[in-house]
Amino acid sequence: MSATARTVGLPILVVEGVSLAFGGVKALQGVSFDVREHEIRAIIGPNGAGKSSMLNVINGVYHPQEGTITFRGVSRRGMVVHEAAAQGIGRTFQNIALFRGMTVLDNIMTGRNLKIRSTFLEQAVWLGRARREELAHRRKVEEIIDFLEIQHIRKTPVGRLPYGLQKRVELARALAMEPELLLLDEPMAGMNLEEKQDMCRFVLDVNEQFGTTIVLIEHDMGVVMDISDRVVVLDYGRKIADGTPEEVRANQAVIDAYLGVAH
Amino acid sequence: MLYREAGQFRATYAEDQQIFPLRQDRIGIAAVLVLAFVVIPLAGNQYWLSAILTPFLIFALAALGLNILTGYAGQLSLGTAAFMAVGAFATYNFVLRVPGIPILAAFALAGICAALVGIAFGLPSLRIKGFYLAVATLAAQFFVLWAIQRIGWITNYSASGVITAQNYSILGIPIETPVSKYVLTLSIVTVLALLAKNLARSETGRAFMAVRDMDVAASVIGIPLMRTKLLAFAISSFYCGVAGALYAYTYLGTVEPEAFNLDLSFRILFMIIIGGVGSVLGSFLGAAFIVLLPIVLNYVVPPISEATGIEISHAIISNLELMVFGGLIIFFLIVEPHGLARLWQIGKEKLRLWPFPH
Ligand SMILES: Nc1ncnc2c1ncn2[C@@H]1O[C@H](COP(=O)(O)OP(=O)(O)O)[C@@H](O)[C@H]1O
Ligand SMILES: [Mg+2]
Image 1 (cartoon, chains in turn red, cyan):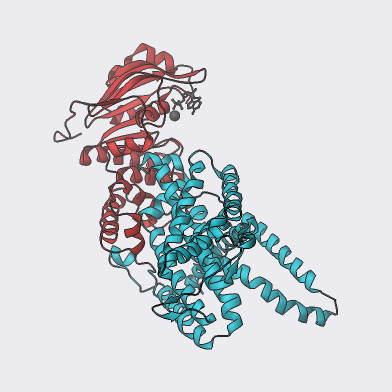
Image 2 (cartoon, rainbow over the protein chains, first blue to last red):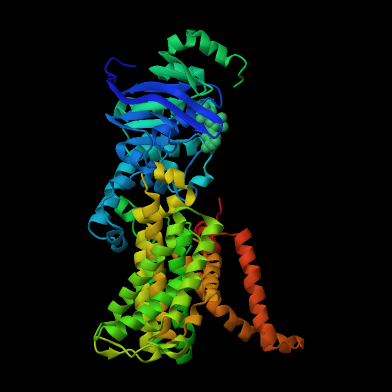
C-alpha cells in the first residue's frame, strides 16, 4: 500500500463479551475485539466457528444473549435490522442474497433506499422531487457500476448472471448505501483465481478511495495475509487469536485449530 | 423490422428512465389510448361497452391491485373481493350520508376505507408468509361480508343487504349511458394504471420487490419490513376498493354482498396468474383473457360442433370454460410463472432480433 494510503484511526466498532446460542449450540462465547476506523479487519476460522454469526450480531440480524456492540460510541445488544443500515453498516452475505427478480441496476438502486426522501405519493405522480431524486441516485449508482466494472450487465436480471458477477453485484448494492462499516462474508468464496484477484482489488480500492472500514470473512489465507491489517481467529465460537497477519500465522493455537481442518 | 431499438440511443439517464423508453412502445400505448378513448366510444356497441369492456376494465383494476400486493410485494392474498366490497359499500354510504359529495371524492374516500381495512388484515403478514398468509386473508373475505350482511347501517337497512347505486353526475353531466360509464371507468383505470407503473419503477416498487425476493437482505440494506408490507396492503386495497366502487357504480348498478364472495377473489387471482405476476400489463392481459374466454368459446364452439356433427350443449361450453381455465393456470404456474406478459415480452425480444437471431 502506498505511503499516502488511509490512516487507520481509533476503534469505530467495539464488540465486548458477545455470547450467542441457538438452543444448545453455542455459536459465540464471550467474543471481544475491536475494529479501527479505515482498517481492513479479517475474521478467520474453520467452518462453523461462528464467523457469519458474528457479522449477524454486528448488524442486528441476531441478538446475542450477552455482551454489547458499540458502533461509533453508541452501545447496544440487539437492534431492529434496518436500523443498522441507517447507522451506516453495510453487508454482503455468504450465500448470495440478491433480489433475484430484479435487474442489476434495480438491485443496486435499492441500496439507495435510505437516502430517498420523496413519499410514495410523489413517486406515483413522478414529478418534482421524486423524479429529481431518481435521477440523482441513478447517477451515483452508475459511478458504482463503473467502479466495479459491471456496465455491460446493468440491465440483466441478476438470476441470469454467473456466480462471480452476482457476488460483485452484491458488493455494489452494499456500496450504494455508502456505508462507513462494510461487513463482507466470504466475498471470494467459490471464485476462480482471476475473479478473486478482481475482488481483492475492489476491496482494497473501496477501503482506500472511500475510506470504508471493512470486516472481512475469508478462507483463502493468502488473501487474508495480503489485504488485512489485523486478523481475529475464531474456533468453536471462541476467539483464539487476534493480531497482525504475521502474529496470527505464527500463533500455535491457530496452527492447531487449522490442522485437521480440510478447506 | 418493426420492433427495433437499433438507432434509439438513450444519451441521458433521464431518457433511459422514461416510463416507456422504446419508441415503439410509446407509439403502441398512444394507439391503444386513442382506440380506447376515441374510437370505441364512437363506434360504441352498447352491449360491448356495458357487458364486456367496462367489466374488463374493472377486473383489470382489481387485478392490478392484487398484483401490487402479490406480484410486486410477494404477499399472497385471497381477500381481494372483500376489499372490493369495502369500496362498493363505502361509496354507497358516502353518497348517501354526505349530501352533494362529488362522486370521484366518494370513490377516493372509499378507496381509503378499503386501504385501512387492508392494513388491518395485512398485520398478520408481519409474522406469517405464503400459504398461511393467504389463509389469514381469507378471514378478511369472511369477516367483511359477514359485517356487511349483519350490520344493517352499512346497507341502510335494505333487505338482504342489496344496495342500488345512486344516480350521479360529473361536472353536471349525468353518468347514465353505457358510453359515459365506460369513459368514466376507462379514465379512472388509466390514471391509476399510470400511477402504478410509476410506483413500480421508483423506490416504492423496488422496496416491494426486495421484500418479495429476499426479506432479510431487504432489511439489511435499510428497508423496514413492517412499513413496506403494510404500505403494499394499503395501496393494493385502495386499488381493489376503487375497483369495487366501479363494480357497483359503473357496471352492475345493484349489488348484493354475495357478489363479492370468495369466487371473485379467486377469479382475480387467476387473472394475475394467467396475465403475469408482477406486471402492470399482465393485469390487463389476464383480465381480458378471463372476460373474453367465455365469449370466444361461445362464438367458436357452435360452428365446430356443427361442422363435426358433435352435439355440444351450453352446459358443456361452460364446463369447457372451466377446463380451459384450469389447464391454463396449471400451465402458467409450472411453465411460465410470469404469464402472458412474459410471453409478450419474449415475443418482443424475438421480434427485436428478427430476422437475425445472433
Ligand atoms: N440461524 C441459526 N440457527 C441455528 N444454528 C445456527 C444458526 N446460525 C448459525 N448456527 C450455528 O452456529 C454455528 C456457527 O455458524 P456460523 O456462524 O455460520 O459459522 P461460520 O460462518 O464460521 O462457518 C454453527 O454450529 C451453526 O450451525
Ligand atoms: Mg459462514
